[in-house]
Length: 71
Image 1 (tube, rainbow, N blue to C red):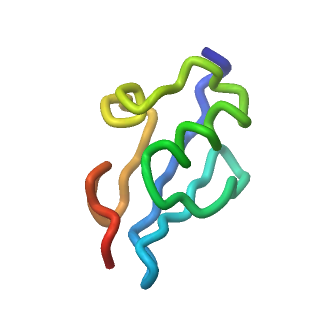
Image 2: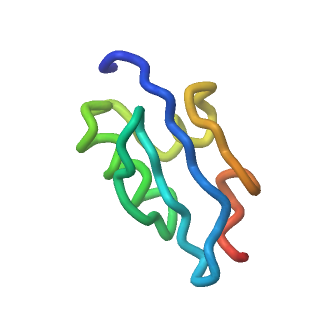
């Protein structure tokens, strides 16, 4: 995996989407785990998959964990 960068998944917005930040850069709005995986892979974490996103200590979930997608 690429160098460890802090990964923050923000609380769900009104539409259920969650902002995703990797390091100092916002990567986009995720509407499910597959979106987060794609953002992480584009950021250089090629080995990231849904299981890794759920279990990794590098991911900081704010406002609920990986199953929280409703505001």
